[in-house]
Amino acid sequence: MSAVEERISDRHVLKLLRAMLRAGAMQDGAVRREVAGTPQGGVISSVLCNVYLHRLDRCWAERGCGELVRYADDLVVLCRTRREAEAALAALRSVLAELGLELKQAKTRIVHLREGGEGLDFLGFHHRHVRMTGPRRRHIHFLARWPSREAMGRARERIREITDRKRLRLPVEAIVQDLNRFLRGWGRYFRYGNSTWHFTRISNYAVQRLALFVAKRHKRTRGYGLSVVVYMSPNRMGLITLEGTVTAPRAFKPWRDKPNTAGERRR
Image (spheres, rainbow, N blue to C red):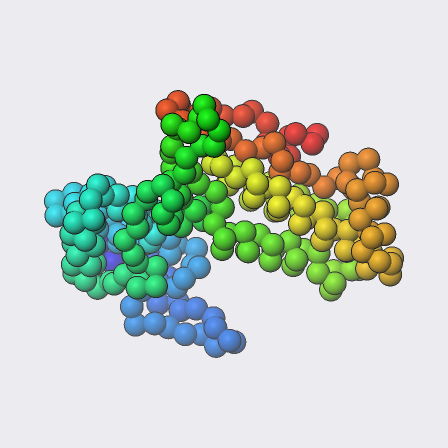
């Protein structure tokens, strides 16, 4: 609240924010009210997070080393040497301790982004230094990114939820509509990168799950469902594809965007 009061003096707004912080959160049928912090998933929690962590941004400009990249409570510090990275990590711990916060040890580490080395996950993307294949392109190396393993797992989990057995009473058209809605949103987020192979896997998985759903509705085999979706239907029963929608960066050249998205390509 002291961070909010640096910019806002309207007592009605401040009173509302205090009430939201005291509201607590429902967990296992009971309301829990923490002593400090804001409920995770609250409608204003992300805004208050940025308000509070803006103090980190200001302190980093004065005391930090390296380039701080922060989105809400996820952050990466870019450094040129390991010594600079270790100093940045120590400075980050010090600044956060002053704010009453600490780093999550399981997700905090120093990564050397070099060819053949390990990568890092940030905002759902996996970032890795790679070199292009082929004799004429071997001299080109760059930082590539694609959906992380965790992001791929969550996508498959969501597709399984949409095509779950408990939804067999719904018409296939409704299932396809839900799948398309998810695929469009997921694809638009991850299409900026080197995600072609990953998009193909998710598209194929959606087809397989839809085929299994159709087979269960008719009490037939998976092969029957696959033939209905892929061969008997001229447009895979309206299911969109993510293939051909990736906007990949070109080495040493500015970004270019594609006018068509996954949803527009199918219309």
